Length: 289
Length: 314
Image 1 (cartoon, each protein chain N blue to C red):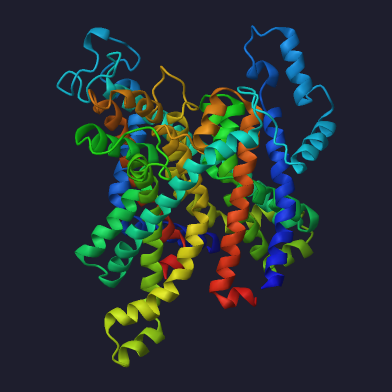
Image 2 (image 1 turned 135 degrees about the vertical axis):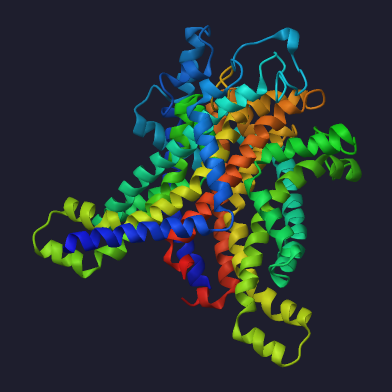
């Protein structure tokens, strides 16, 4: 009986959170953008009208038209198809790097907050040191030594975003650690990992989800910046940042090479920002009040 | 205040030590042999061995670190592999355009953000506010390199009003110098302006609901005097914090902006170093940027204490 009441209360709360998120003014637009981007990324081979890598020098720099909705680039590749395939890279880089950072940061935060003392001091100074580098400069330096490519970008961005999550999680752990039910669990002899898993993590999950949803858009921008500088996905594979960089030499003759992927990047980031804001408003009790 | 300065300085020491360790480790994160990464495969074994000895890579790690730190403390940040010059010399040659760019960008951001932010807050929920908030959203979501290319397309390629690349020192040729920095500074400044606008708007909205504002209005002060004398002064504190927090974004943005507009600044130096696999140069410049970033954050921290007495006496 009690468990069914609890389950229905949890379901009610989830529904309430969803309702609030959807109720935010611009959230539906953001959600629609995210949905389209995810579907495009998953179904890229089906929805791309042309092979994104096939060159056709006889049809280079073709204007946008029926055959090529966003025109062609300097070697005759279809810009639209490359934008569609580029969605995969952007979303993958955005979500995976934030997932890496959330996981690593949460673990470090739990360890620091739970252990306290010297371990806490060491972990948090380490996070301060990472935060002492301007994010893009750190990502650039890491990307340089790890080598160009998606893996290097994921690790570099993962490292850059880890301290934010570590600080957040540590704060939550310190707050939850002081609660009576944690004392009770400890008195009952529950081991440290169990307390962390059953009591600390569920309570600390909300701010982590909020932070993650706000970080994805910035991670996508950062990946595009690194790819623009030549450190992300390497040509001929399509990524929005590297497409824009390749097209800047043709700005006068064929601006569509830059503005096609540019528009995709901008709209995706705006959409994700709206979703992030809506998630924050729905989950953050202060924003709700 | 002196105690606050000492406290903040003391807290910086361990972070600085970890930063140096991180920068030192950079070279050792390279998959495989860093010497192979820096020199072409074809480079002869003697040249490779001499570079290895020069960088001390043939010695144990802790010995390398101690020697590297010793050199750092003597002001020796190493030598660039490309031109053989000390890193500090490379940096000092490039710092001028970067500082000019940063100062101009900061000025543009404040010139844009203050009128827009104040108008947005004072005319809340009107079309003025909607334009202001849309501008802020646009600036936050727009990547630097895309904005740079848009401006190049509009003012350089289409209207042909401004140069799209290259650098002229404004100290030597004022007009041409400002023209060469105009597009890069607007690119960088608008991104910063967006964040400042958003912060100023929300902190002003908060201040507008305070009791002292109601009191000032009840005394019969004009709305402009209320805003200028009571709201704006109190709303400035979060703006200073945000300006400090945005320093990192400004430096990152400068890297991209200098790259797009071919400005010979520090950001361009890092990117060139990365592509030339000139790791000692990258290490040195990244360390300098990080130390500069820590120092500016420290200054902002202290400035914050100066503006808000509550922080000073905490």
